[in-house]
Image 1: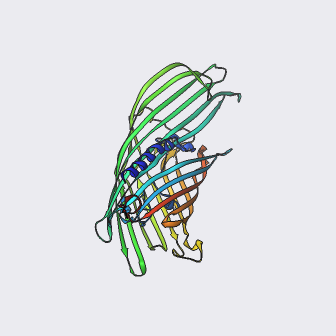
Image 2: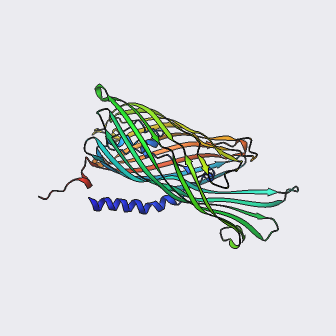
Image 3: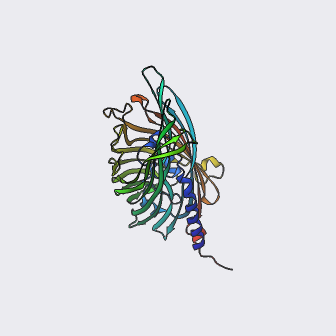
Length: 432
């Protein structure tokens, strides 16, 4: 057993490099630690992101650590995300596609009233490349400025949940976040041989604690009512690194640095306020479920950075409302495979906590909102394992106020391999 757990840990360590590459193509990943991801399985994403008041005996739950107390099967889960993004301004459209490993996790029951899981997930991703052209009074090109960034932040976590009564469970999750981000600004003026480039290389580290609880009341005919809540305590993401300003020959991929004008160490932190999620759900085991949840968090606060006075954006309170559920026609059907398929759907409306002034005057800020609708299938395999497919179509941002609108199609694919009870890796082997 120990050897196999070490193999999973090694796999998680090796795949961290895949997360760290930064697969976001969003211009909004320019800000802060990049485009932030909510920890969700493919199953939860297909239901609009709900999960705080949902639990299942064979599915992992990244939203509420108390839900792991209801896990009854050892489950190994791997998720992949494909993002097809279309960027729109008032004048142009641009498309990009990226694929990344979304999560890798293992969960298993501890006796009949507790469970534990651990894994690796992305916390944020940076990946943008923007250009801005300046013209003189005669409409001649006077300067080109290129903005680019890459990298991201990952988190490794461990979750423990336990039922303290037949209806009530509590849980705790501890995570550690780590990653690197590189941002640069290159300026090339017309009729000037040398360009100038500002580059910022940051290393980000920090930990966090999440507390959760879940209440479940079971009625006759297997009908149940669930309520859940989580609180992620406020935490800091400490940032260290270096910043440089230097002249170079060329302003493309093959630029050649010539003279360093300025070099300095970076030291600061991003203060993430407490995040709370609450929700309710109603359903029938292995038949249907419908739920709604609300998420709330105060504005992120950067401290100690020299560039936080930028007047073109600020951070604000973020929130999310999700509605979704699933329907399973007949789990034990022998006449039709499609009756054993789980059908999922949901809606999500989110204020991501960022306001941008497209004109750069510092007086006309527009909140960046995100709306998505999702659909999904749970395709059963042998021995309780499942392939889960989730499609999410949505829109973030707007073309008004000189901003960018993003239309995206997220395709999430996950594989949940399940061994009954504490069998598989955690079963004591017998020799006949």
